[in-house]
Amino acid sequence: MRVGRGGRAVIVPDIAGAPYSLGRRGSRPALDGDRVLAQSAPYTRRGLQPASIVRVVERKRKNLAGVVSHHDPHRLLPSDARLDGYVITLSADSPGAEPGTLVSARIVDYPNSYRDITVCIEESLGKAGSLQAEIRAVCRCLDICDEFPAAALAEAAAFREPDEAEKAGRRDLRGQVTVTIDPADARDHDDAVSIERQGECYLLTVSIADVAHYVRPGSALDREAYERATSVYFPGEVVPMLPEQLSAGLASLQPSVERLALSVFIRIGKGGEILGSEFAPSVIRSVAALSYEQAQAMLDGQATGADPAIVEALECMRACAQALLKARMARGAIDLDIPEARILLDEQGQPRNIEKRGRLFTHRIIEEFMLAANEAVAQKLNRAREAFLYRIHEKPGDEALTSLAARAAALGLRLRHDGRLSGPASLQDLAAQARATPAARQVNLMLLRSMQQARYSADKDIHFGLASSCYTHFTSPIRRYPDLIAHRALLHTLGSGPPAAGTPALLTEHAEHCSTRERRAMEAERDAAAAAAAIYMAPRTEECFEATVSGVERFGFFVELDEVFVEGFVHVGRLPEYYSYVRERMELQSRVSGKCIRIGDRVRVRVSSVDLARRSIEMDLA
Image (tube, rainbow, N blue to C red; front, side, top):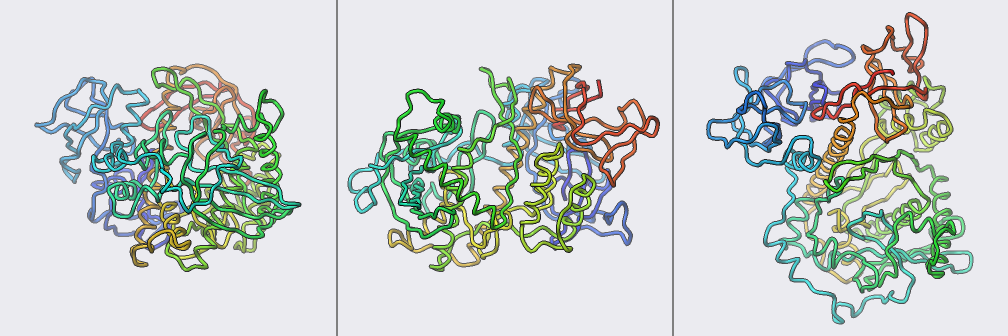
């Protein structure tokens, strides 16, 4: 069962198909994520078939977070709005906490037809409304562990700087102009790049931290890395997959120190075509750790005192990336430009500003190089019949496609298809149609939501969005376990490592586990970012902002503020006139004056309320 923050509950069947709807009280006694046995009704309502819960088969949630009530110290107010329908009380043996404190609690008694939820406080997380406390609450609720077992820490602490014996037999790349290009606040450096021009072609070298050298199968480090499967990134902090001694130390490709790597050498033609690839364990020495902004300033001639050799390498990288991008677009890959929020924190760790993260061409350089390396490794391992995890992305379903076409038509755009898509080129064309319109962001989000979610698989399949027939994740072994699996498989293929362990069934289990952990990390990161936005806007209630309508739905419309990169919602019930939703044009129209509210309209809004539990920012027209 899945419950949205607005309280709407649905049952997602094990066999692929449309979800079943539940009434507001129909979710009892289940909680979000529980596995249930349900009985469907013989009719549909609002396009969904209703169902009722027969019994709970398996409980997912073991913990919850809440604020100790100021009115009743034995009651918790849930910090997750999906639990709003329940009264949460402390057990008789539960330790107490100060009113207004955000706590993590273990569920002692689950709800049934005659009682609600009873919990026992396990940890005080801090004052409600503190971003650090909210992040800790997210981790506790999703069972994300932010501490490493002693055995894993001891293994990490035992490693030393690589000696000559460890470097022997590796390709020596220490003389190349190798750089890392990452976000300014990056805590680890998985990948480094170097390039040289060979006539009209390029020889691109992508060097990836040799994490497999340190994290051996069956070790305490390996068991913990597999359990986590991915690092989780929050504003101002990270819950890493590997201990800091490795993730930010020996396995990180820091500048001016020798590091062990696994390198991919790719020959690229002037038109972006891949002419060949080679692979080898290597030893590198990065000459600079550049941020995207620093690298872009060098390309734009705005960096004073820049090393000419680095500038020359960056210019060559730009030309190569342009060729790769053009070739990738020609084969039909989808390039969605959906800006991300950059949350800036003050000295107390609270949000001081939220701005739109700019997309520079240096971002594209690294994106194109990593895509090329991932695809080259996937093809190599596939030909060698090695056991590894493919990164796959199935085609959109027919229903999603039909809905997307209708919504696009309402915006005056056309999705070219005959009931189905043979490739992603039609979606790319739709994004291109919207690029110069006020609806560009909304269309990109519509495209994203219409597509299946990428996942890991033991079996080869397409990556629809990249228009790739064979793809894997290889370039981030510090923060993703599937990449470590690919490293081990490649090393075995090259004769530098043991054979990959595990049966096809075990590899399928790994794929499902890593996909589940990835989705959990994404949920946690989204939740923390939404909490940061709510915390930042809470003191600004009653303030007015210039904004742009970014989405229109039956029950209201979303606005994106100019001053800060925050989205709020204006409910139709708070509008001065009665508006009805015109589905054909995706707009709200007043039945009184005939005024319309459309995507791209400029409006002035006032923040009316902020609900941290629901992660919602409600607004009125000013």
